Image 1: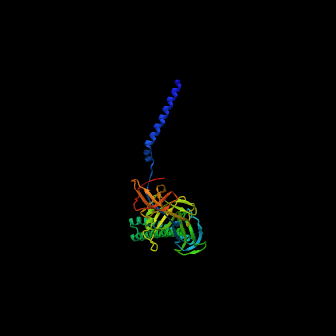
Image 2: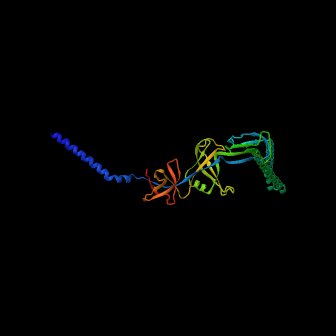
Image 3: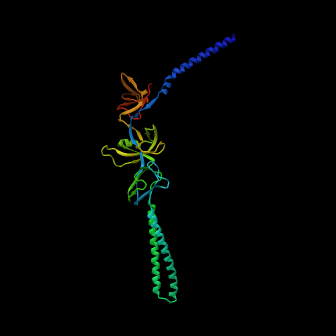
Length: 340
């Protein structure tokens, strides 16, 4: 009997606890509903603008010969890099080498004359001191010594000039640059100053673009710039290389060059690159999540955080779940309630 009373008493206590819990939830329901309310801000709407360009070498230069002569050796063909020694081709320098040998003989001859006159001057100085010969003999020897020294200096200068001319018979170019075109063949005669090839620096690629003022402002304000190489379907980082101070008179756009270096599958010209810019639209057009829109009789409304409902015009529904709306009563950063 006592056990039965205890069980009945424990059952009553449990029922009382359940009733109190239900009452507590009912009383506090509005508070929880208010906490669960979510708000979103209106952001200025943007539109994507695709601008296409094609890669080019970071720099290209013509290569010309400084002397006339016959092509003897060619060290790089079209598409190949300039070798590490930095030479594209060499001319036949046989006549320059013969002139250098003649200059060496001249220098040796004048060196012997200088040695002889130095010894004679030293000997005659002693004789003049003893007053055994006339002083004009010593003066003539000093003059001959000076002339021999100057002749040897002239021969040395001539040899230096010939050595430099011999060096220039090999046509130098930037090591590692690629040959774009080659206008010579072995055995061909070339004139002084003639362009024999064009080379380019493809270690870094540039993308020339033409941008309007608004497009350029959008590009310069971006923290990160990427371009899509459409032929390889990859995005690569880019940076602004040059902005021209001039503009194109026909399109009234500004020449801009982007540069890409990393993550490029192949370094060559002609790769199609696409720059996507998110341009701001009309000042009264904003982007909000579609969940914040309330539809009433084919009209759309937004509930602002101050409780006011604003009628808006839906411009475009986007795949990301946002919609573009238009309203003169909305400012960027206004908060609206998510209703679904």
